[in-house]
Image (cartoon, rainbow, N blue to C red; front, side):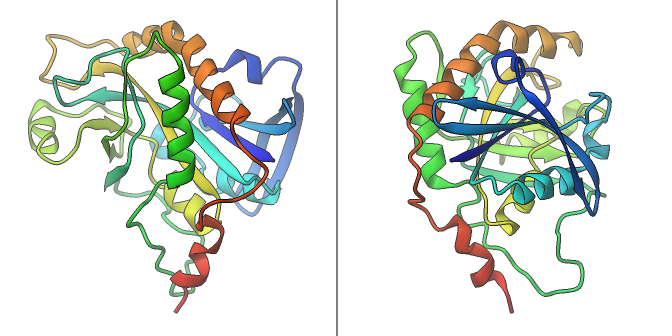
Length: 254
C-alpha cells in the first residue's frame, strides 16, 4: 500500500536513504521523499515546502494533496504540533483528533471552484485509520495519549491572544495552524486521512510565557515516539480498504 506522511518537521527514519521525487501539479511542484517500510511505500512531504520556510498561512496545501493523489497514495497520516487549551492535555501528550473547527480566513479550501461539491464532514477523519493510530499508541508504554480531541485551526502565523483562547476553549481542546484545509482536500481526493498531534505548549493565557523554541524542543524530544507510532500503524495496515473514504466524492456531487 502507498502511505503518505505529511509533517512540518523531520522524521529521520523516513528521510534517510530516500529517493527524491519532484511531482508536478497544477498548483506547483512538490518534493516528495520516497522510501519503503515493510511492504509499503512511504511518500513523505514536509508541508512547509522543500526549503522548510513556508508559514502555515502560505503552505501550498492544494499542491501537497494533489501530488499525493497523483502518486496514488491510499492513506495520509498527518503529524502536527499543537497547543493545549485544557488542563488535562499537557505538553508532551499525544492527541488523535476526531473533529475540527475551522477559523482560517484566506486559504483555498477546495479543488472544485467551478462545481457544486459538498463533501461530508460528519466524520472528518478516516475512522479506520484513526483506530489504527489509537491501537498503535496503546502498544507503546511510555506515552500519554488521548483518543479524542477537537482541533481548532487558526490562520497564523501569529499565535492566538489570551482572549481568543478563552473563547476557543469552550468549543475545542487543541489549537494549531495546519490541519485545515489539508484534511478537507484529502477528503475531496478520496484519500484516507488521520492525524497524530503532539502537544508542545499550553495555549496563550494558560502558561506564564511562551517561546517558539518550545515547540521544536518538545517535538525533538518526542520524535522517537512519533516514529514508533508511525511504524506500528504502518505495520498494522493491510492492503485493503475497510472504509468509504474513496467514495465520499460521489456522495458529495450535485
